[in-house]
Image 1 (spheres, rainbow, N blue to C red):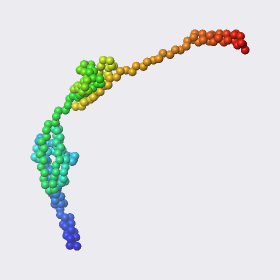
Image 2 (cartoon, helix red, strand yellow):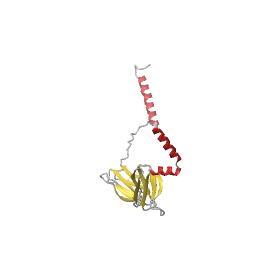
Image 3 (cartoon, rainbow, N blue to C red):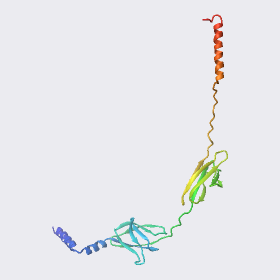
Image 4 (spheres, one colour):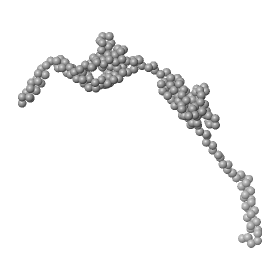
Length: 221
């Protein structure tokens, strides 16, 4: 009974406190995360939620409250590679994180075509220009070229030429794999069709044979 009375009194006191005091107390139990970056003015995300930017000239760092625990911190700035890290924060503490961003690599301006043929040693013509021959060991014959649509023609003695149209994307590799095959040969068997003259001769021969058969003694009806 005494314990319940204490809880009731504590609840009454808490309700009687100004809202600002309650908010300050609630804030104090949260962990503060302080983020700075080089260069500054980088975007900060915690668990994919945008929190603001690091120092923008008016303040040295970005300070905000988070729940205690482990969070994923993403710092991003145009022209620089993203920095992703895991930060563990503890209740009531301030965790300071300083991130140094590296320059992003330049965007690729070319792509590749990897060409393989079976059998190998096939001549490779790229957009009308002879570029070399495919490998006999199965290794790809690689061309580094500008993005776009291109034509690749492969030729090998004794086989029909093979032409392929290939779309090339910057920073990506397209593959052309050609298996040469001989064309299928169809042999036609000639057929004999009786002519009109031949049919007449057969008919006459049949009539004569029947007449002779009747004329022979002993075969008359």
